[in-house]
Length: 87
Image 1 (tube, rainbow, N blue to C red):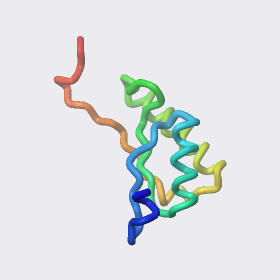
Image 2 (image 1 turned 90 degrees about the horizontal axis):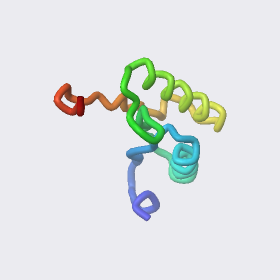
Image 3 (image 1 turned 135 degrees about the horizontal axis):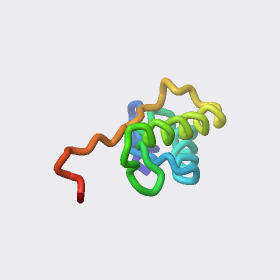
Image 4 (image 1 turned 60 degrees about the vertical axis):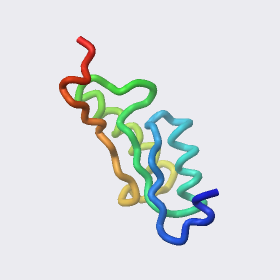
């Protein structure tokens, strides 16, 4: 409802890179315009930067396949503080 009422260019925060979640947010983007933030995760936050990059690359592929310009997408790498680890 908020996207229908918003008078400007909305920023949709956020989509996981998991296919079903991302596609549902892309449908909102298609309907209402604006920009989208995509998190570098599917179910859980990947532990390494390399894993997060792979998740982002997968999401970018789905975004392009759906016909969206990547200039409308922001990727959140989910940088965590060192103290957030449970080791």
